[in-house]
Length: 238
Figure 1 (cartoon, rainbow, N blue to C red):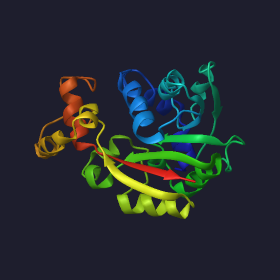
Figure 2 (spheres, rainbow, N blue to C red):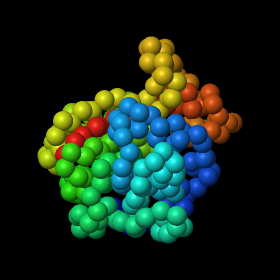
Figure 3 (cartoon, helix red, strand yellow):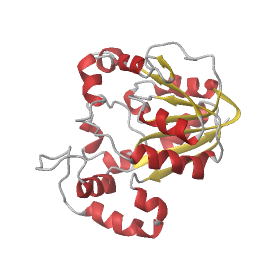
C-alpha cells in the first residue's frame, strides 16, 4: 500500500481529527503561548504544516500571528476563517506554496512520510531567510516499545541524531533537537522532570494504548501517557 493511499483514506482522516480520538483541550492554547514565549519570541506570519482541524491556527491567530494552514485532510475547507491549502505532503511537488513565512510549525507529520527529506526541504524553501521553524515527532527512544504504532500510519521513526541529520541535510542551520514532554506542568516546573521520568518506568496502563475504563482526556491518563510518550522537538533556522 502506498503512502498516499494510507494517508488519503477518508475514514482515517475523519477518525484522527474527531473529537473522540483527539478531544478538544486547553493544550493547543498553552503550547502556542509557550512557543511564542520560549521559541519564536515574536509574532509574524506562520505556516502550520499539518494543521488538522485548525486548533493551532486559532491559537496562533489569537496570539497575534498571521497563520496559514496546510494539511491533506479535505476537511480543512471548513476552516474558512483562515488561509488554508490542501496538500499531500507525500506526493505533491515541493515547494507546496509560494508564500514564505517568518515561522513554521510542524507537529507529528514527518513520521507519516516514507521520504521525509522532500517535506523538510519544502519547509526550508517556505521559510524566510532568518526565519525559525519547529519540527516535532515522537521520540523512537521513548516509544519504540509500542506507543509509536498507536497510529498505524507511522512509518518513519526518528532519534535525536537522525532528526538532526535530516534537518541539516535539508540545509537548515543552528539545528537543535531536544526531548520534549507534552506536560505543561514541566514547562513551568522543570525540577519535576525526574519524578515524571520515574513515573514513566512504572507499568501503568493508559489509553489509547491499553484497554482501560477511562478516556484519553482523563487527567491521570494524560500524566501517565505523556510521561512515557516523549516527543522530539527540533528548533531550526534558515
